[in-house]
Image (tube, rainbow, N blue to C red; front, side, top):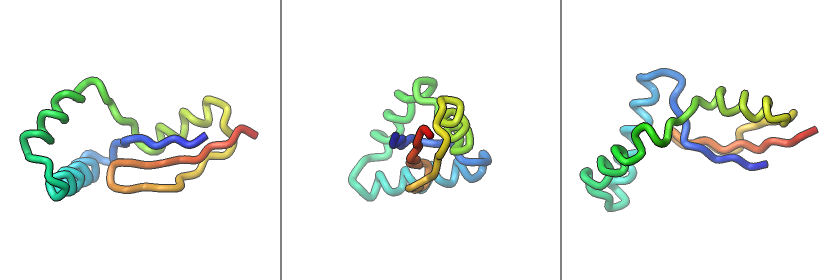
Length: 84
């Protein structure tokens, strides 16, 4: 299985830093601050990201015996998981 998720940083400070850098990236891609804020407000309470560790625990709890991160960028991560 391949899973790619938005994640929460290991601490509030690191999470906020990654979110700020992601918003700067989106602005560099042409999104306005208003558009970024509208999307953030629209997802508030709907998309509740977990930490990387919490995602890995969920994969193991689902029966995957091998779980490894293959990609990480700011507050996004990807895992490959195999049932064994």
